[in-house]
Amino acid sequence: MSKLLIAKFQKEIDPREQPLYTVQEAASYLGIDAATLATWFFGRRYSTKSEGQKYWNRVIVPADENLRLLSFFNLAEAHILAATRYQHKVPFPAVRDAIANIQQEFPKSAVHPLLSKDFYTNGSHLFVKELAQTIDVSRQQLSFKSIMNKFIQRVVSDKNNEPFTVFPLAEGEPDD
Image: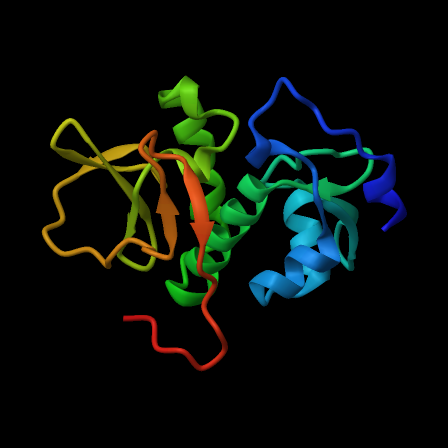
């Protein structure tokens, strides 16, 4: 709670970008392990037997890295990442590649790449539809697969196609 008292409201940014949630709160809301969520936003060091110390780079940029606080947009990004990993079983290397490729191919999407496009998956790659084509952003190749899993429709967007409501899956809830 003391972090929230230190955080300052920033008039110049979208209210959904305000750093308002601790990692523990966000993890509780989303049903994600707090340590996993912290790793997604802040990275972590870990030891391996063969290579010694390694660093796992973050995949989502937090609203306030110094205070370790997250925004509503961060919650939406974490929800999409959790569904991509746990519900659709997309391997993490494909997720990292997809994020990097979206940031490179669509510069306006660099801040929140997971919120910038409607994602589809076949269980091993992530796809976005662009100009009537489906692009495999996991490998940055065009794909013409006719059948893909449905997009995670639990993030509701506003008229500007930005998320404004997140409906996390409850444990045991069917995902169809």
